[in-house]
Image (cartoon, rainbow, N blue to C red; front, side):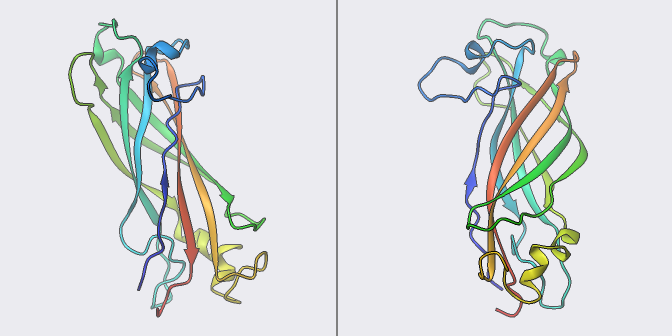
Length: 200
C-alpha cells in the first residue's frame, strides 16, 4: 500500500501578535511586544506512522492520521534572566482546520482536543534549543467515514472535483500558558492528500 506525499509547511507564529519570524532580523523576542516573556515555536510537523492520508485499509477499517509536532520555547529578550522555571509553557489544547488546495469546496470538519505538554524554556546562552516532540491526532478515523472523505470510499471520487483524491492544507493551532500564567498560542500547517489506497 503506497502512501501519499505529505508536504510539511511550518508556519512559526509569534505569540498573540501573529508577527512572522523573518530570517536575518533581530532575535524573535526583540520583535514581539506582547506581555508573555517567551515565544512558543513549532520547529516541525511531520507525518507519524505509515499510510498518511489513506482513507480506508485493505480490510475495510480506518485509522487516525497522526503527526509529530516539535515545540521550542524561547525567551523574547536576549537580556532576560528571569527564573526559567516560571517561563516553561504548558500547551493545553489544539484545534485543526482544513483548506482545500485542489479546487474543491467541501472540507473535512475541524476539531478541538485537549492535551497536556510541558515545553521547557531554552535559556539564553544555552546553545541548542530544548525541543519537546509530541504525537497528536490530525484526522480521526471517524472523520473518514463522513463527507467529503467518505466519498472517496463510495462512490470512489470527490463530487466537487471528480478526482479520486482530496488535497488539503491542515492548520494546527495550539493554546497554552506559561507557569507564571501568561497566555500563548502558535500555529503551523501540513499538507495532506487523502485517497483510498486500499488494494493498491
